[in-house]
Length: 297
Ligand code: G1P
Image (cartoon, rainbow, N blue to C red; front, side, top):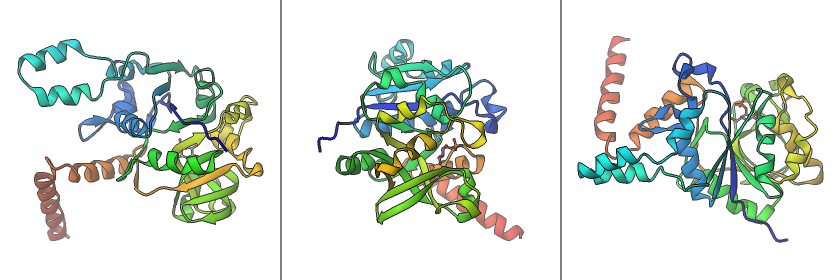
């Protein structure tokens, strides 16, 4: 079986980010900063490491700061060059995208994740493609999507990142109905979006990384409403499960739910501590904070 390489990725970034109001009143949530990089940068870097060449953003009104972020900034570059700040210049350059590498499509109405992905259908064309949800930040030695691309080279079909969650949390995730469990790779016979714990087929949840066949776009064309009255990506993928073409991939790494405040704070601590330039000072501060809290108890 010849499996086509995955070179296109879709980033659904049209959401309003209401959970982070008032911060998201004037900035897209994907621009919110984890240590010193916007959330979206982590997803872009992960996609690049996995061999993605074409980046497709599904945006909406009020997201122009995202487009500006990926543009070159000649004034800033000149100023840094003049000041001899080559280290900052390098950091800045690492965020630049080649002309034509990013495309933007608009989702005019908020109709769900499946609908957002469907908005990219013309740019995706007849090729397998990745989807990355920037809210899910994954710290891993080998970036998660790269792990998946390697596994997908063996399986083909459709692959979703998967992780065991506490059974009472299934209603926040897409959940896999497991057919065959081979450890890292699981064959699914179904997928359910946000099932109640008592109705969940397992506690193996979908995390926001996908490698999908173009057939998913055909399934999304049907515009079937699912959980919450929205067009769900999970449902379009589930349609392929009967033919044995849906796989879950238990990635190696730590996932942070940066779509929630607690998750964002956890990610901030973890990423802060993992930075050689910050860990000593920040670690000492956290240590003192904990000691103070214990003393106060
Ligand atoms: C989306 C998907 C869900 C998946 C989750 C992972 O839900 O619909 O299947 O498990 O992302 O983060 P959302 O969190 O956007 O409601």
